Image 1: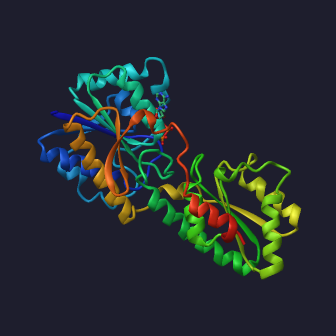
Image 2 (image 1 turned 60 degrees about the vertical axis):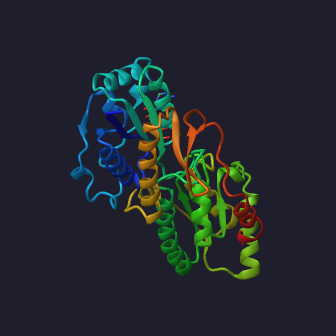
Image 3 (image 1 turned 45 degrees about the horizontal axis):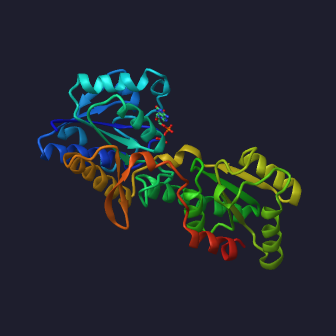
Length: 328
Ligand code: ADP
């Protein structure tokens, strides 16, 4: 291997820069050149790239976002897209490609592989932690802390004004961020897809614990953490319906993209560094169509094709505890 391509794709995540840095440093130590493609797969389709040198990755480990920019790329999903992307890799004599992104990005990588002679390896970078084959994805730890910081602040105002807050967190179709941030914030309730989808008009499972808490504990604030996509009409509609049903003001707060930003916490910098370096080392060992993940503290390979096969289960211990004890 003489030349490696790298790109960041899909939703950006804190720690992607640490990963890019580790790829560049590890490759350079093995005399391998690194080409960074811009804006996810768009950079491959539009030949937008630059050679990554040591000074490009200096002073970036602490920065959120990604120096290569990230994007969705609908053009890769057109019939000619994958072959076109592979053609760019061949033209530039790129022997291997590292894709930093989520399971969607890995599906794109698998399509490109059908037309590409070189090796491809994925590195899981997404705040949602919804990628199978790794305990944590790069960006997840930071997203929890960002959400937590916000919920703690919302708690203050909820407490002062004695109303109920529904805080919507990201996660796409996974409750990882909601469960973790909800537990850490001491949320009175957590609603996420894994607990079953709420049906409009049937909010008993949400209302009963609220009434119970008021009666027994006289709580002055009550926080419900809601994973996005948990309620058909959205979290604002859920808050409105709850207000009407119980006669207490319920406010929705949609945290949104704030969760993707910020300086990565130490755990994400370390994970990004480890998996970026591991990806390069494994490419040199011949790895192809694999994802570099971490399981029980150990760097491991996992087939790229299996990363999105099933919904990665959230911690069953915490789920049980939250449902039996924590929801109060
Ligand atoms: P994430 O990687 O965060 O899960 P997305 O699901 O948005 O993000 O996927 C990122 C990009 O991966 C898409 O914009 C598209 O370019 C590419 N992609 C996803 N699925 C496919 C597919 N089935 N075929 C080709 N490309 C795909």
